[in-house]
Length: 255
Image (cartoon, rainbow, N blue to C red; front, side, top):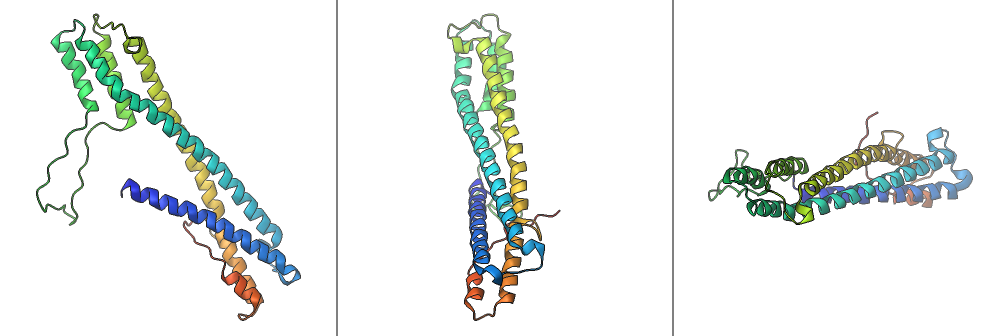
């Protein structure tokens, strides 16, 4: 599945979450407006429980949104650092070539540098399809993942650090600066991964509040609708009011 499809699905789901919460608030307002006419026996349908459901869900949504924002900031910071690598790596090679390094040393460093470069996509024959009948997708074999980039840059720095004549005047090209940048890459990558774990955990709590079977916001909301429509005849205004309130169950959470 393409990244675009994943983004579209996520966007649709997040919009649906907000709509479900809005629908529950509308339904809760109807229940309150019914006054003495709303008198379910089940505790899970009573106003006090409904207030708890919406409060817990709102809190879970806000906690998740906060962690998602932190995760996205870490991703943005990480991209800035790794984009610097695209400019820095060729400058390191240039500085090494400008030193008195032997061809063997330069070639060793170049071996690491080439790993940064994307390999050409394989040519496809006209009309060629894969075994499942779909047109094959070109897969880049370049080391684009952050972990691979860190490993490759570490190898490059190690290679040039063994050359005694590598001592450029530019501060950012000196070995100490390169090692500092290497640590910076690892730090921003670790920050992304740590915040991703936190965001996923918070999202699971949010989804449980929204979609847990029987006790989630959507399940409770639908149960409230069933109760009201059983308490009021189909042709009454109160029956029709709740009929317009719609919930969408995007996830099923198993306990």
